Each structure stands twice: as C-alpha cells, then as structure tokens.
Amino acid sequence: MSSRVFRLLPVALVAILCVALARQAGAQDNDGLGNLNLPDLSKYAPSHGDAPLATSAAGDITLSAQLTDKGADITRGLVWRVFKPEPGADGKLPLVASAHGGTASFQLEPGSYLVHASYGRAGATKRITIGKDPRREAIVLDAGGLKLDAILSGGQHIPASKLRFSIYEGQAQPNGDRALIVPDVKPNTVVRLNAGVYHVVSTYGATNAVIRSDIRVEAGKLTQATVEHHAAEVTMKLVREDGGEAIADTSWSVLNESGDPIKEAVGAYAPMILAEGDYTVIAKNRDRIYQKDFKVEAGKNEEVEVIASEATAMDPEEGAD
Image (cartoon, rainbow, N blue to C red; front, side):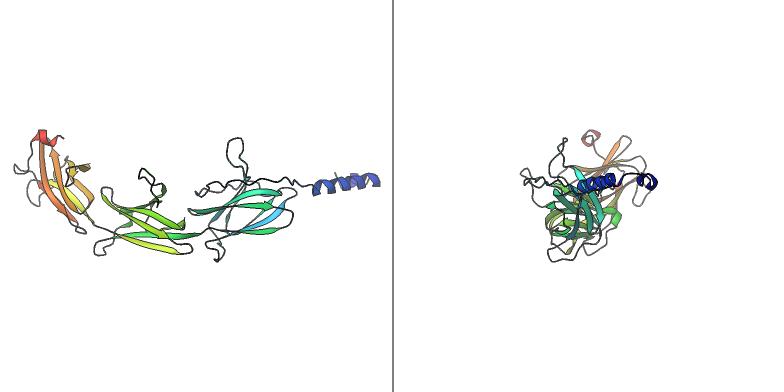
C-alpha cells in the first residue's frame, strides 16, 4: 500500500490495523517436546546452504564448539546442522538450518531441537531449547587429530604415491570385522576423529605389504604415528641369459611360501611390492613355463631374473594350476 493511499484511510481503521499486526508479531508456538534418544549423526556430510535460517517470532541462539571442555572455540572447519527432534514421514529428522565455519548464530522458532556439530570425522549431538531470550550453547567434541606415515626398515622413505592408510573402529565385531571409518587416507594428512582407539591398516603397494596397528587418539591433541614396513620393490623379467633383454608377452604368477598365488601380471616386466619372505615366481611364455624361487629382504629393491632354460622349465600341466 503506497503512503498516498494510506493517508486516505480513517484514523480509526489505521489504529485497528496496527493492533492486529502487533498481535500477529507477538504470537509464539510454545508446544513442548518430550525427551528423545539422540541419533547417531557423527558421520561427516556437507552442509546445505539453502536451508531456512530465520523465521518470524524467532529466538536467537549462538553455537560454539571446542575439542575439550577447557579448549578454545574452533574457528573454522565446523559443519552445523539443526534438526527437529521428531522424524518426518520419511523416517528422517527434518533439517531446519545449517552453517559451516566456526561459531554460528541461528534464528529459530521457539521449541526443542537437536544440534549436530561435525569437525572432519569427529562429531557430537546436543539437544537445545529455544525461547524468546538470546542464548549461547557450547558443544564439546572430545576430539583430536591423527597424522599417519610409514617408513621402510632402516628408516628409508616410502613414496607417498605408493602408500595408503585405512582407519577402522578399534572394537572388532563378533565376527572379527571392523567398521571402516576413513578409507584411502594419504600419508601426512590430518584426520579429525573423536577420542578413542582406532585400528589402522597401512598398505605399501597393492600386494601383501600390509601393517596393522592400534592407535589411540587423545582429545585436543594431534597424534602422529609412523609404522615400519618390512617389504621391498621387486621387478621380475624373463631372460635368455643373465643380464639379457626381457622377453615380451610373458604371463607372471607369484606364489608365497605356502604355495598360494598372491599376484599375477602380464608383460615383459612384472614390478610389484612384496613383504619380506620366500616366494616362487612362475613365468609363462608361449607354450613354455619357467619358475624360480627367490627371497625378498626388507628395504632391498632388486630385479629377479628368470632364465628361460631347460633348468627352469616346468611341466606345462603342473604350471596350469
């Protein structure tokens, strides 16, 4: 309504309109909500910027998070989500608002909500109640950081491109399996986790060089752990004489000390990373099969030459398995 038209209204009608608007602005929903079991919402997920952050007749709340109960406020890297505590028709808690960064402020209708704070893979959930008066709430994540690396025996460096970590829950299930928390972690990457014990698997290469260890993460601290691999890089090649050229179109199979196959490859060269121990390599070229026993020593990279001769030849029927 323009100001020109508004001046033509009777004074009494203007007064009635003002009273009605004031009553509407002061209306509030004070329905209470019963206690609910908090859901497990610790898994990290991205925020949604299009969620509503403000409503009419709203109360102000400021949320902050700390790693420990006496720690400083986290200033960045947080993801905040505010949910209604009652599941919707789809069985999920309705998302009311979200934000990311550090300390966050929201304007919400009075009532009860569940607030979840994520910090990397660490997270915590808290129930809050919104009223007419502004308030602050703090969430203690009880979390820390984990930074992983690995070396070879004697302290030799392992290229980051050949090294990966996986982080599992520390407690194994009755069947022996463990829940995977973070897969494919690069070395020297800080992973934020709730305080506790975790089972870490370090894989060097893609064969059998695997180290497992249990590592404790402490709240408010960065835990740095370095594991030691007892393995080496080995390259197999089929040659007609010592130091000769590798023969192309060769199929390779590597067996461990128990005779179980652990790696197969095709080509003139068969590079692979193996844990220290005793092995047998079988090379097949055209209709001939050759084999050789060899040993892998930790940190000692080498070439393993298989000589294509009668001395290394096998019965084709024996090698077919």
